[in-house]
Image (cartoon, rainbow, N blue to C red; front, side):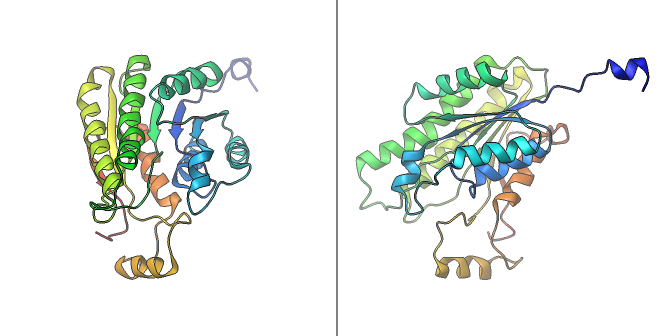
Length: 260
C-alpha cells in the first residue's frame, strides 16, 4: 500500500430518513435494507401503537431487528419512535436524526394511517386522523427537509409511497391523493435546492394484511402471476435516490407488475 492510499478516507455515507418502518416485513423496512446495501446510513421512524391496533399487531423488538439488519449492510442507524399525527413530531424527528447521524439527504415517506371505511361509515375522527398522518405529516416533513437541506445541488431526494385506493377506503385514498399533490409540488418548490420529488404507487404488496382470497385475486390479475414484495418497491426507490435517478422528477410512478 502506498503512502497516499494509507491516508485515503472512504466517502461519507449519505443519510436517508425513512418514515413508517415499524415491522420487519413492511415496505419501509425493505426500502431501508436496500438503501443500506447501496451505501446509505438510515434514520427511521416507527409508531408501535398504530401496529398494535391493526390486525397484524405490533412486532416485538422490530426496531432493534431492523437496525441490526441495516448495520450488517454497513449502515449507521437511528430509530426514532414518533406519532406523526402530532404536528410537532416532524421537527423532533429531524432534530434526532441530525443529532445522531448528521444532515438528511433523502426523505422517504412510507408511514400511513390505513383503516378501511367508505363514504357512509367513515367517522370524522377517522377522516381527520388519516389526513393528519398521510397528508399533513408529509407536508410538515417535506417542509422541515426543505428548510434544513444544505447538500450539493442535485443530490437531494424526496420520495413518498402512495396508493390509488378509492372505493371502500375513503379516508385513506383521499389522504393519499392529497399526499400526491404535496409531493409533486415539492419538485417545483424545492427546485432551487436541486431536490427531486416523486410519488411511488407500489400497488398491493402483501405485508400481512391480505386475506387468502385477496392474495389469489391479486395474483391472478397480475400479468407476472405473483404478488408484489417490499423488495420490488425498494428497487425503484433505490434508483430514484441514486445519482442515475436524478432526471426522474415530479412524477407519480406506478410500479405494480402490470396490475393496473
